[in-house]
Image (cartoon, rainbow, N blue to C red; front, side):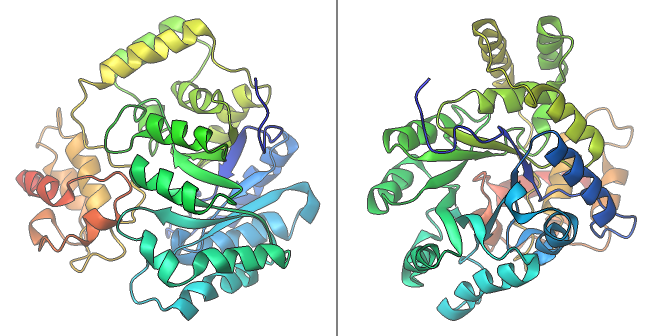
Length: 371
């Protein structure tokens, strides 16, 4: 295999986006601390958060669970600046960096990303001079490596990497379900990154958890091939087997998920030729799947003027078959205190924010049948 920046990094990264919660819905710092300790004990080093995760609480928990409890040189930390949030000015966008430093107490960031670039927002990073800002902070030693996370089309990715050849790495959504999905284009984006010789961190290897619990036909394929492995292992190992990958982020929500991930990533072995054939068969099965491809990232929710519970509604819709009431009771629970599908005013904010490029407005119209 060829060499690339980050090849030596432990191939499982701890994504601090879907953290364990207390009964009141707040992040459970004690349980996160246990997971952090177990991750580091097993050899893990890469931790990933963002200014916007949990409205900043992810960075706070990162400080209390990781930075205050472990030597700074024993791990690496990545966070992100989101210039596409509504109401920002150049000054307030750049302030996110300093706020992240204060929240985390990290002193510096090993990795720093311009967050979630796509066709709808990439010009803001130019207009606000965020590229130059990141380079300045790198020159000052406050950032060791910088890049961007990406949710756009392959042509835009090629343009950005051509215009900014100095980026150290990028973050891409890559999983076996989206490799040939035209709405995500994982495979094509990966090939473009490799042509530009830029290293990759991988997000959504399990597509928001969907590939940890695939349909019964795919479960059967995996269990017949490797009964000793979890369904999640196939997605994470698929992503980690690619050349040019620094690490694969897993948004682990409990210690059980972490133990499962560590069981096959502690001593990682790339997929064999036979295992790739199983993945190809699973991809064929996925072509028959008509469920809504929402990963519950909740980017669509923060700016919704009607406060519609979009990810919850889609989750109910995906599971409505077989429910005795057609999913209506689950729908009532998912939308309690929130807007319903019929409240949508078709403003389009959600579709601009969706990393999966879902036609949310039309999908919400379909979900009105649950009301």
